[in-house]
Image 1 (cartoon, rainbow, N blue to C red):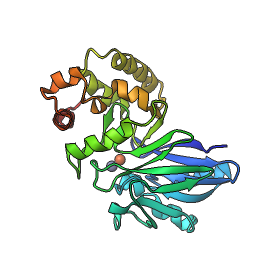
Image 2: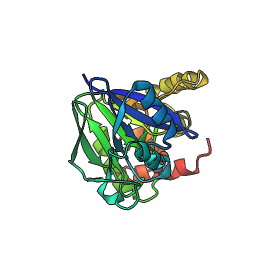
Image 3: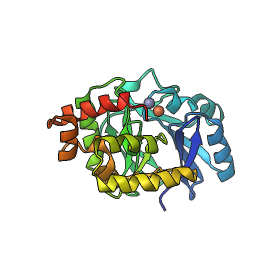
Image 4: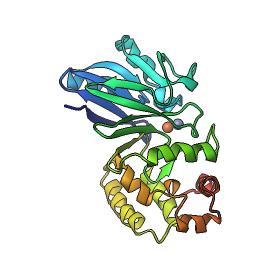
Length: 256
Ligand code: ZN
Ligand code: FE
């Protein structure tokens, strides 16, 4: 049996993901923004925390590390090798191609810099779960705080080539605003218009839009679609880094 993923809303619009192995009663947490809802869920499940998987060093992704370690001092703290010194309690320093294990599964590390210079993603090929932090959002992508458009295109290319059925667990509920912006640059995209209707209804009913899938994102997310004619026309560029860079700049200025 593979692990189960519990989605815990935190702060304003973050999601913390708790991976639960019901056979061993063990859990791992991805990007604990805060500790308290994680501790509550662990208690409810009767599970012991064995790992913290951090995607990058921002406080809304590592803010709960210390509180969790206070209760589960044996838990291993994973993060990117480039984030050494920036992730509280980090014990494992990961690079592209490294592997982690949880439950019966092996996760592969993808180095995906751009949002930050140390950002990594965790991909579990057997169950098809991708934990991508602030690199890929549903309908959008992370801002380029410490990277270039070229780096981000490379990083997103790695995610885009995963199987269409891959479950994409993004760290924020930004989908509705992302799709509003997407419609301004790709208004004739029918898949995007249909997705916008669905997401609008979901958010009106206070439902989460995460996880998405790679297949869906490839059809609606402008930040994965630098090679489509509509976005090349919208940006006035054809070269991937320029199409992407222009879109990212437009989104940075978009109020919604
Ligand atoms: Zn971030
Ligand atoms: Fe974040």
